[in-house]
Picture (tube, rainbow, N blue to C red):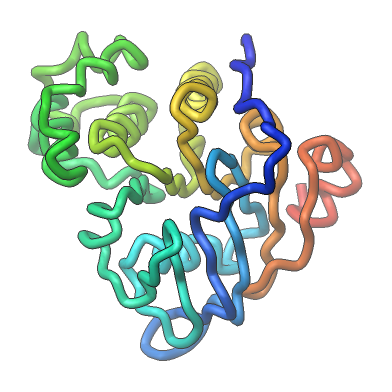
Length: 249
């Protein structure tokens, strides 16, 4: 596949978009993410990798406002958002695609996309989901079909498309390649990279698919036991010994 050009480095210092400082979060007051400090810069695609059960999904849910912060602070666009809930974060421009997709199974494809328009504020409410059909033609063919009858790959396209019609500033993707065909994974990677190059869409990508990570992200952070334990370039991740050390693959 052709790899879209990335944002050209202007030589200026990177501007932070998302900043976590000593953040802990979890369930029932028990921390899973521990003292997490992390920065996602504007226009960056950053991947987070790690074995199952190390806290990656907990981290993404915390950033999305689904889980409460036990301690620490989160800033987005230079503003404190530590205690924002998921709706407030969505309205701030955070587009979240959960593991398992989270589509509305009984609604049609078109109706799911319309739901996405209601989240992104007034700028999103102009019928812009036609661009989603350009990215994912299969969805246009099935726009009147109930989402629950779509294949796994089509549902993932829809989950991403529904978020994208809200014109997010940052995209949070939790295991987008899980259980779907390689050609669909490539389509998703192309959309992410194209939007990064075209409009500067920043993306935090939680993923186990090393090929996807190496294609889409320049750097990745490795999580273990709720904390960041390493920072790797995409080239380093291509070393089987390094990949095995951090992912047991």
